[in-house]
Image (cartoon, rainbow, N blue to C red; front, side):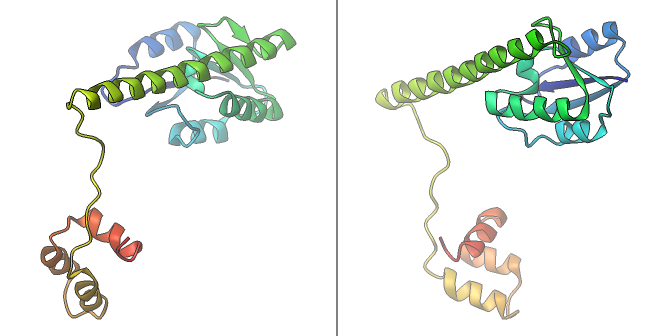
Length: 186
């Protein structure tokens, strides 16, 4: 069976280009993740790896759609090899059925990892410039623990007040309240 795996980094991005290539390749089933490829914790990637069987062929538009680090790429391809699954990357004209294809795959994986690291480096440089110009507001702000946090949480845990009331009394939003509770006030 010919299976396709597509990935776009955000829900706003469009996967149509990858789907068009799949249609031309006669792909029978497609798995799509709309999230960063920085790690392998992607639901459709996991589902696809569980779905593939010996003799299947996995087709991707490019290596960067499958993995963004050499470690992840090698881990995924090792699993594919153990299961007897061939990997084809159209952009790189790569087929892991041959030793040359497997070698080339490692090189392209290193290039994808380099690209990711360069993106992060440019982002960091941009943030430093914005900070120097006073235009960077920063990431998430650290929220101070309210003075009444411990007493309110104690009442909540003793079922004297509801969680909603505890959040109102502390002035915390739901996620922040529960995060602070799980970390015991940080």
